[in-house]
Image 1: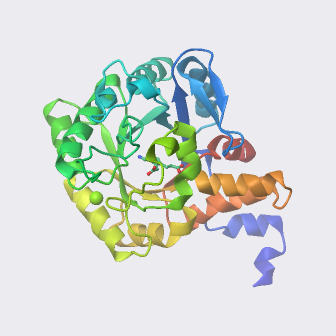
Image 2: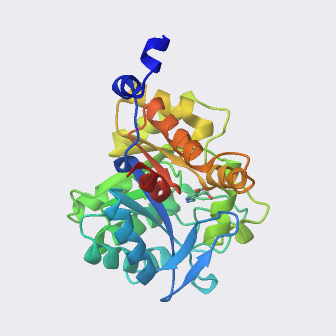
Length: 321
Ligand SMILES: NCc1[nH]cc(CCC(=O)O)c1CC(=O)O
Ligand SMILES: [Mg+2]
């Protein structure tokens, strides 16, 4: 076996999987105002940006050959409510950010997150009843309005990350009747109730709202694997174009099964906690940043993913130039 490992040319020639900037989706946190830039303490190197600065960052993203951005809003407390009405405000932060980005960089794919957690006072992804239970169908109707407002603003891809049942079908139907025939749906079909999301909740400012709560009644149980295939099959039947598995590295087995059994475009989200643990080790000098970052991303390709949503997108794309 060692003959093919003995020289760089032979290793290059027989390498089965490789990374390219075209594999990445870059997640960004968008703030109100202009000239605003805030560091996220639990995610070193990640900044929340107002739309004007985000456009500058998006230019670099596009120049590096990264195909798409995923937008996550930081919603001011006074815009949060029990009914999450700000989520479908045509002049809301996300809707304005989408318009501005599409005007500035029409070729860059813009993916929007369809979920209510940035907009609810309690930080849950849906509308709750008086026991705190997240109501499925009422939430789904709200998600339809939110997704449509994103499509109207010009989003290329709407990405429901809420895990309500039936919402993909409802969103697809509404997009069709409103004439948004080519708006893509990236379904967070296999999204686990993970403890790796903590830094993200800090970044969007929802961790204080959700307090000691959890999302066990709608996100998947980490013990399950077959259920992920069932979830993905349902979302595909309802009209999803692409599937997201989330988190990433601890769920590579799921990404592998989804790709192998369903043979559809499959993405994985290397989530905030995965980013944070890598960065913590890099900052301490315990792991070497560039090779470990690239190795962590290559694992997704080997598992069969078509792409990776990662906070390392820009750093990795630079490393690959
Ligand atoms: N709609 C919720 C949402 N959208 C993106 C993330 C997490 C992403 C990350 O950790 O990087 C979450 C997590 C949650 O359920 O609170
Ligand atoms: Mg589902």
